[in-house]
Length: 116
Image: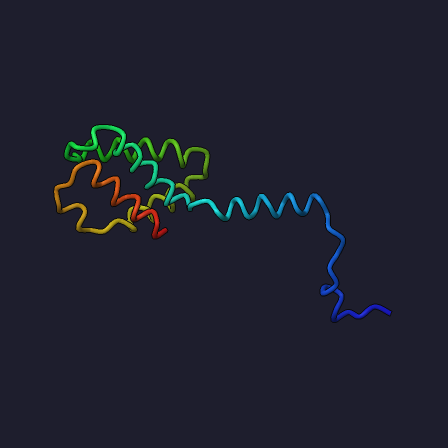
């Protein structure tokens, strides 16, 4: 007679396909969120291109557009918009009022990405 209460407690035989799925799931969960990836990619662009110069509004727009194209293309619009909004919400408002170099912005963006 089967025990309905303990039926799920007995471990099933290991299925190689299940292990592959579990491995992929762990890999996916270990990745940063899309919002964090967006900020990290923008930070990498700023750190690579003239990091000692001040960041202009146009420079910020280009870095963000490149990150958006690289990270969010292919996702449904609602997913991309949500990731962008979360990324911008993670930025400290004082970043906008202080004059910083592109390299300093890159450090701040990486720090903000770590909070997502």
